[in-house]
Image (cartoon, rainbow, N blue to C red; front, side, top):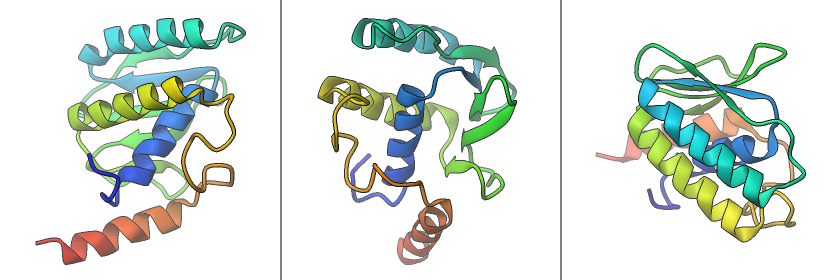
Length: 145
């Protein structure tokens, strides 16, 4: 995925959520489980002080959900179906979405995220603006043949 793709900021936000949020439950297709395990091993190597890692829960359909385990709150969703506005949405199928998310996750880890200031990209230190993200994706879709 190119950085000019209107979904790029959402991909980055999901990758940052994976890296900075402890106690995540990742729900998705069964093929995702060993990939989550690999990510957890890498996180343990790169962030040795981290004590809580993401858990995997098999889900139905072609979707990926990032949820807080304790609050059972969905933070992000990768799917063709649009979730409520309080959920970060990446409008892609699970396989394509995970390919993009994992690439950015590895790039951020290589850059030292989350311990580095500004390496998450522009506008990463402030609050995520989901309404603007969806508006940008919607506007771009109108102009793309």
